[in-house]
Image 1: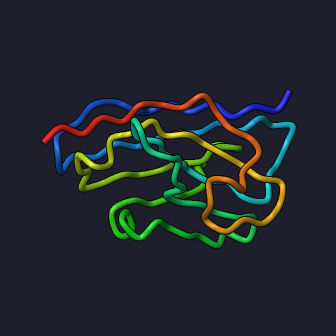
Image 2: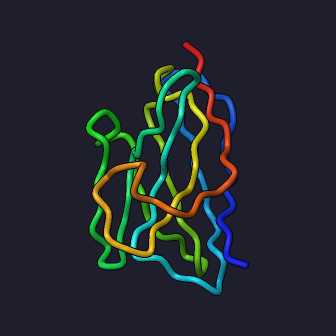
Image 3: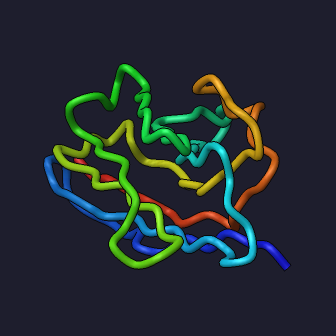
Length: 121
């Protein structure tokens, strides 16, 4: 059964770094994969995505601080987060779609369980 599984979240101080990992089910390859976050009381927002053509998009507020990439291990997706800010605090989800997407959380139809990122000031 296809699934996405995240890891790598945690708590850091403002200005710190974290790296998130997402493992894809080996039985399925997606057109678009993304990292989506949801803070308490807020809607989900897509922060970065990469498609099968290696085209990348970022949410403006994270551009220059976050980097999405495919991992060296087969079927992994990474999100390197640097210069973290308290407003980056959220549950981060690995998400995927079988079709092309704009950077839009409503486009993805496969989701992991999420990993918590907390940034203290």
